[in-house]
Image (cartoon, rainbow, N blue to C red; front, top):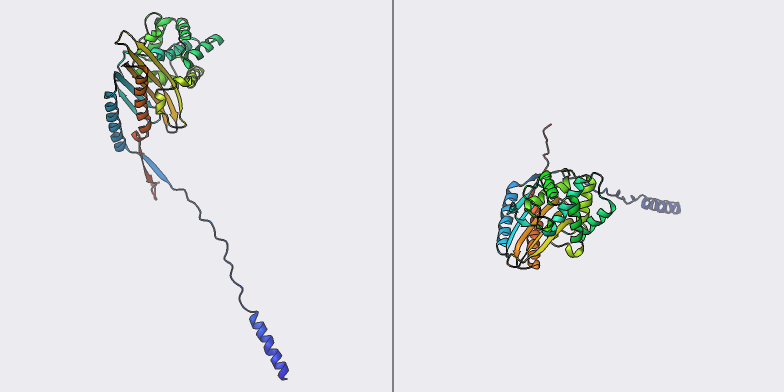
Length: 302
């Protein structure tokens, strides 16, 4: 009997050990759900006005410290920001900058576009700045009389074609260079979309050694289309006229910029001045149209 009791107690003990609770395994934790934050952006007019005043002051100081005469105009098509100093001085010689004018005027007269030979001339005139090609195209467009008609139609009231066959003597203003760029970008004035693509495409592929100037306003990755002009002026104290105008496009900006100089001691000095102005504008353009960020209202009015 004793043996049976001991055996029963042992069995009970073993059974008791088997009744321990199994460890609780936690369920897999769910990743937190990311909720998009609603924010609203508003123009910060006060900060933009202050930034503009500082930039204009710094540009004026820079220009005063450079030799010769320096004028410029800028307009950003995205923000509407405009800048300028001497923008309407219309006696600035274009030199090779007039080659874009010649091509645009010829395209406006040709409803069927250019023939193969003229497309080659256009390529050499814009991308290589070939003067002989420009001579031929100037003749085909009809010379100064036809150019005057084109300028009138395009609204370039501050541009005068060079005398006789001297297209390089065309005078213009920074403001008119911006007007011409607007025509090329936005259309109208007798230029088709294909015409404008042709001109801007050539301006976007100028030879590397001619890609200086307003391109200094570009950030990494921005696209640039430009045309430069440069010429010695032996009858004006052996000085130089150097100009650059074009379009700089990238995220958040579509900048049209023209910087023109004359009475420069040399071509290199003119280029340096133009790039100084362009670099300052390009680096500080975003600050001219700042925004304030605010969270969306939690209980919007229906």
